[in-house]
Length: 433
Length: 148
Image (cartoon, rainbow over all chains, first blue to last red; front, side):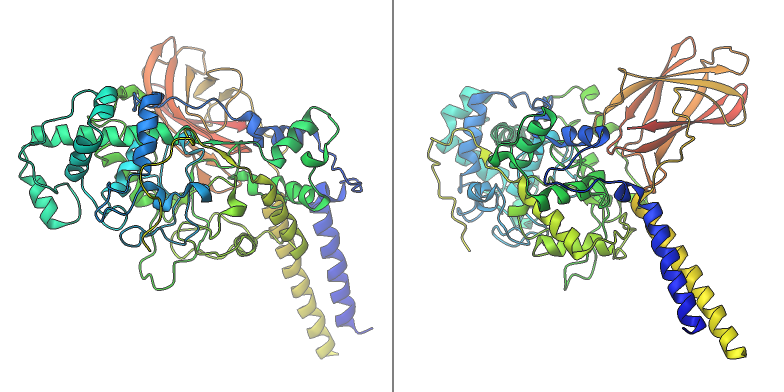
């Protein structure tokens, strides 16, 4: 044996020993017998991830109608209302499709035009202080108002929507929110939107009337949010497995995880560090992270994410501290204590819930990855971020381990509990494209 | 002979590189907090000027929820410090990121107690919270370790 070969062999042996010593939790793991044995610390972690650990729906002090069922039923109708759009064909449900878990399976949302980011699902969003990928809204009701006046999503304006409500929803509106404002003499279209003609028309409306119309517009968001917060997640196979495991109950076949899925779960909460950010019963920390996601091909300026999102949240027309909010200033703590600048915000995007993620391709804020294996390969590789600094570290997972995590993620799938499903929506939910 | 020696030195360098990589890689994956961390809720400041106590609302520190704390400050001699300028920062040393919020010490409650608002921890693991105290005794920092 040549000296070089001997030294190389020695290097390999020393390295292998070193890595095994560093990974003592792997070395110490008992032989697998079909049902994983979890330590006390791991059982605590599993409990924290179970849907059974989800708190009651948090109150939204900024929306006094949040838990008003009449508002929620009206909000459901409006969720499907295509007349709330510039071309009469787009509703919230055009992108937030109920039969697709309230998302659209497209890389970018498509309304009257194409949005800059991926449509987010709705279930569980009430638990987050921040809405949108960049958290530019601080409530579900203010989130709902963004797309309604976006030039590429609904493409409409608040004066036009007010007139639809006056013509089609006067009685239910007034029974929930009180008298409609006087809309006589207003132009057909006006609002603080990108379109210059509508914007000019809006600027010519006296401020007092503008505020009345904007209050009506805010009520649209509050009703839609009252519906959305009633869309509930249901227990998955993973939840049933954890509940049985923690109760030391025998596992029914329907509650079991396969060998591969259990191995994936162990990686998820251990070596792969997924549960650092995908934590809690919704498998998200509802915070913002730069994970080095690539820029969409053809886009020259990387999406800055939270850097801009937090500024928009602070200055938002419909924020928690705005005149249209029902909150007391002390209720708006998330806004008050938000991190407003710094390198960590650059290209940071909100951690999505992993519940139903396996059915929700493509992935990331602009659908950059088509499949879960592509996502997992990205996290394993931890490439340099196109802007800012990625928080990821290389994981060194094998092909088998990546497949195990993918198998585990498929156990996080369940149907949604959607209220008022027996009421037929009054408008078509078919997209126009 | 010279050629063999060169190959040997080259291999040693390779071994060192491989070991360093293995160490870095291993640390990234399986790093645990230092074993000797003090998780006490009462700490002396770095230069010994102050003794500080944190009292989160409730016994445990919840994950992912905004919370209010009480920070009690006294001098090394045990005199309550009511008039102080206190700033807060922190983060997760092993992850390289800061706090998810910008907490503030909002008011003095008397008897050396100060209200801290906007505390939040969005992940499990080892967190560090540092209070920078400026008062009559001087400027000093007190650091708390938390395990969530």
